[in-house]
Structure formats: C-alpha cells, structure tokens
Image (cartoon, rainbow, N blue to C red; front, side):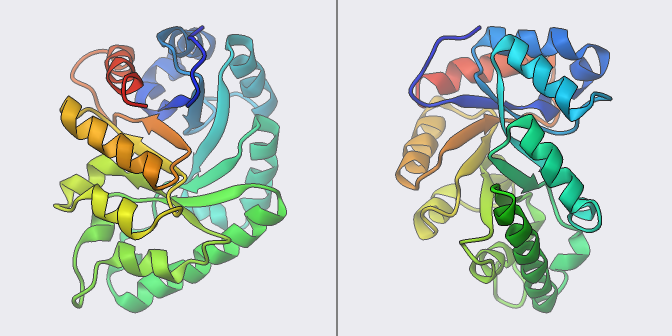
Amino acid sequence: MGESYARPLGLQLYTVRRNLDADVEETLAAVAGIGYTTVELAGLHGYTPTAFRDALDAVGLRAVSGHVQFDTLGADWTRYLDEAEVLGQEHVVCAAAPRDAFRSLDGVRALADTLNGAGEAARRAGLGFAYHNHDFELEAMEGMIPLDLLIVGCDPALVQFELDLDWVRTAGHDPARYLAAYPDRFPLVHIGEAPDAVVGADLARASAAGVQHVFVEHDETPGPALGAAARSFRQLRAAW
C-alpha cells in the first residue's frame, strides 16, 4: 500500500479496465501498490457492489467517485445511487451526454434541466453529482461554448463538474480559464500525461479553484496500462 499524503491522488479505473477484466483483486492490489489511495469507478467488472467494495477495502483503496452512463439517469438512477452508497462513494459522475444534446443551445439547456433533476435525486441520497466533459462540449455554437452554457444552466447546489484537462486542451481551450472562471464548480478533475511545468501549473490552479480530487486517466496507453498509471503517479505526486 502507498504512503499517506495530505491530498489523495486517485486513478480512474477505466485506465486499467482490461487488467480488471482479467483479475480484479490482482489489479486493485497493483493500483494500491503504486501509491494510489483513491479510485474512480467505471463499472464493476462482473462483481456485485458489496464484493467490489470488499476488494477495495482489502487493499486500502477508497472509491470516492464513479462514472455512470447517461441512460442510467433514467429508470435505473435510484438503483445506481443505492449501489454508490454501498461502494462508499461521495460523488457520482455522468461520464458523457449524447452528442445530439450539443447540436443546439436549446438542447444544452434541456440537458441542464435533466442534470439538475438527476442532481436533486443524488442530493437526497447524500451524494454529490457531476458531469464529465470531453472535447465536443467545447465546440463553439452560435457564438457560445456549450460547456459554459451548461455550467451556468446547472444549479451549483445540484450539479458540479469534473473537468477533464486533456479534453479541454484537445478542443483548443485552456483549462486555466475554466478553473478561474468557475471556482468551486470542479470538485473533481481528470489529468493524463503532460510536461512537468504544465502539470504543476494545472494542479496549482486546481487547488486554488477548490478541486478536492485529482484522478489520473488514460483512455489508451502505448504500453502496459499499469506502467502508465505508475508514471503518472510519480509525476503528479510531486505537485499534488
């Protein structure tokens, strides 16, 4: 197990999804061995919530957050919130919304209403709720950036955001602008690999903006996923 630090550094388990498909216990032990103390879930790989929580507890990992697909915000939402409580989560995160929601400003406003409704149910269950961006939410439309409209349209008491720094840059924007413009709206952030100076600046701004949890995420890695997770841990631990 890793050392104890004042600020937890987590891994979005989508990074090691193939390892988890092969062996959940072995993979979680390896994640903890790198030094991670928290994780963000992206499915349970055939386990029940209770069994996955037991596997996390056995190696000293805490699932403070978990991703959920947009469709789950409907009929399955109450069940998912119950499972999140079993898993010990503090936050539930909508991983993405359909691209069709971002084809018009009215579509973005309607999405904000949907997220507010899901956030209200999460709040009643004692959980925080957030939305995770990709790059398409930052494509200009009718002179506006949809992500900005979505942030403004969501009630901050019900919906927060998980800022994916890499996707923001992919879209040609500066994450620093979002962290400065919307303080306390991003309790969670995702980060991959970047030059040390960029990482250090990002994390300093994240701290000033009230970010609570930083999660490493790699959608794909050129080599073994656990190796990429270890490299990112070493890089980010010095700055967070």
